[in-house]
Amino acid sequence: MQPLTNEQIRAVIARGKLKDTIFKGLGLFCLSIALLVIVALIADMVIKGSDRFTLDFFLNFASRRATQAGILSAWVGSLLVMLVTALAAVPLGVAAGLYLEEYAKRNWLTHVIEVNISNLAAVPSIVYGLLALGIFVYKFGFGQSILSAGLTLALLILPIIIVATREAIRAIPAMIREGSMAVGATRWQTCRYHIIPYAMPGILTGVIIGLARAIGETAPIITIGALTFIAFLPPVPFTGEPPAGLFDWVMSPFTVMPIQIFNWTSRPDPAFEVNAAAAGFVLMVMVLSMNAVAIYLRYKMRKNIKW
Amino acid sequence: MNSQAMSANNPSELPVVSDRLARNALRNVSERLIEALLLSAAAVSVLTTVGIVYVLVSESIHFFQQVSIVDFLTDTQWTPLFDDAHFGIMVLVSGTVVSSVVALAVAVPMGTIIAIYLSEFANSRVREIAKPILELLGGIPTIVFGYFALLVVTPILQVIFPELPGFSLLSAGLVMGIMIVPYIASLSEDAMRAVPMSLREGAYAMGSTRLYTALHVVVPAAFSGLAASYILAISRAVGETMILAVAAGMQPNLTWNPMEPAATITSYIVQVALGDLPHGSIGYLTIFAAGLTLLLITLVFNILGQWLRAKFRENY
Image (cartoon, rainbow over all chains, first blue to last red; front, top):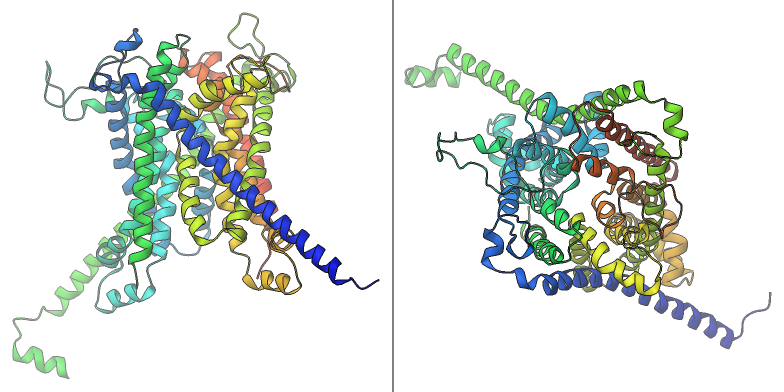
């Protein structure tokens, strides 16, 4: 093989550098498409929906007339479903994460649980809807209620909370546990007074991300048969005639933000597009602000904690 | 000796040995109880899986008592709610396959390029900005993406392809691809960052450029991680529901052409659930048969992913 001349070597290097630069441009281009989609999406919804950003929009029920329709039952429904989801998923998820990190022995049972959790994370969300339709709605007789929806979403986000809890716990050094046990604390006392408090920011991040995912989920809730047209609110405890019980609202029919948006986008009348855009923007603000809080928390945590 | 001396000094202040043992025993019992409680919380995830399989299989058995499995797999019509009922799942599968292929054609190249760029080229400042953007993109509710596909992307595509109908697999698939990009980008980037620096340094020392190192050293070394991220992307695409329900139309249509509207497995389930079918009717049972098909498809890809990961795993 002929040795390359200086010019040829320089040409090879220049070609390599050019390819590097081209690829850099390509990478930035792809990233900017991602950014562009977010910006276009938000801008479109803000511009189209700007007519509806009034107090009435938040305080009106759904209506056949687009200009009078509002999202009251939808956002109240979303909040109540999230409450049930959080009450079910947080204790279960944290307990499961704690068990797997602090208690579980390396045996087949632990292995089954771990494999199972990672597989559940890949199950399509609509399948959870079918599970809930078969079990919660018909077998347990919860009907198409806030309770059914909340429990469905709780199962859906359980893997997210478990994984976040485990990661947060794993980051705590062993000396914390050893110190606690050395002064005579039991395993539970160690968890209760050290592990859980120290893992709290990480757990919280996971919980917020999980709830942000749940609040935007549509498919499983449609599958359990949630209604799309609800012009009343769930009963407030101790009001009405006869007075509603403290927990009557969990059995109430409901609608949620994503279903309201779906309902409006699937109507042929373009006037409802405006409503869909406005409601979509409200949902985006809810989800993105939750995500932003989680990202901020994580960033803060990474900076502050020094063991 | 010492403790004896102490208890001799003030015997009333120290508990008797039997008291201490009793408290110890109580403590052990409550510790056991707590451990059992925590274990049952962890077992909920297993129960969920059992529940999913139980519901889908038991309802599907009822379905297959009325419809032969051969018809289910080979019929070319899907009209379960008509008088002349046909149950050919291939009709729905075709919609799922076409939309997923469109989505992956967008998401795999874009996600991989972003991952390579972030892991091998970008400086830390670009990364600090880019990662939250990707995370936000991944956090957008799918119903909002559905709205975007139907009311923003479809009109734009209709300018380019005037014959494109108002509902199409193409527009839903494209938006679905954008939705999946963050999953591929973040998982692939993690895999590439796990490749030890010494490999890159070796390549640089031999005179490789950054791009050559990335494509010929880092990507092959991280291949098992990349494959895992693609498999996850396939699962997401196959299981995605709302974008398709909103933007791809919901008429069953056996087609391989992305320019047409078609129902997918998931959007069919949504369509049935929106209606008011009586519990136990054949229409009600079809969604469980469709759900079982969906679960089996994702299961196959999951197993494939685990096999790929095991086969191509590189240990350093």
